[in-house]
Length: 265
Image 1 (spheres, rainbow, N blue to C red):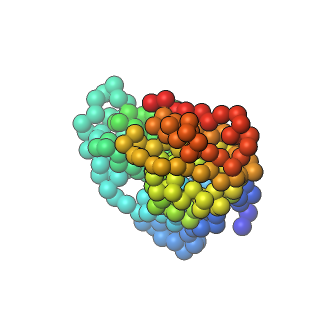
Image 2 (image 1 turned 30 degrees about the vertical axis):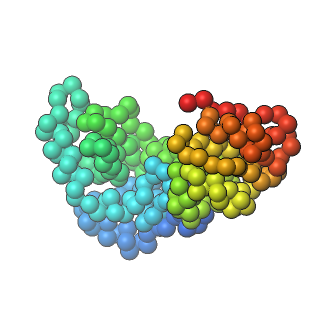
């Protein structure tokens, strides 16, 4: 399929090969037509293209996980109506009419709500996207193409530089990210340290490793396998004793001979 509005977005996700194909699942033309019938409005070309690329599913950090689902929900509109009613004049959303918008992203976080939407009277193929955070407009609106590419940029940053609190998070990551494209690993659990051979076997192009364990965690020794690209190794302060007594060492001579940077808490 040829993409006119989202050509750049589609090219990036297919040629950069950071994300696996399993990260994206598009909607059929029939499903897109059903969404338009549900909304009783014709979707801009940019949104139709996005739905066909990854409207059912987009896996990653801070992305539009299911635009199809969001466009079919009524709850985001109901919550926004309540927020508008209790908002103050200087917050800028008092005059917003929810019947005149189409919400494309909705998030609930620690009791606060965030929305992104476009105006139904925006007849452009690439509509302007407005965002509301904490019952206020968030900066100036941006074209839909810029909006999704910003999402992609953020998702890519977290994909190649994942913070791993546990092994389950790592398992979920490699379900949709090519582990060979990971360049920095932030390891934050004893289980991950104990399975570091497995992590390095999959993430074989890692350039930087950070091991930051809670001060209450005790460990007898840590062995860092050899990695061709490894350039920097940082460990939390409570592991520095291991480094001094030679029970924390790397198979990489350049790392061992230079130094292991200690992360002061």
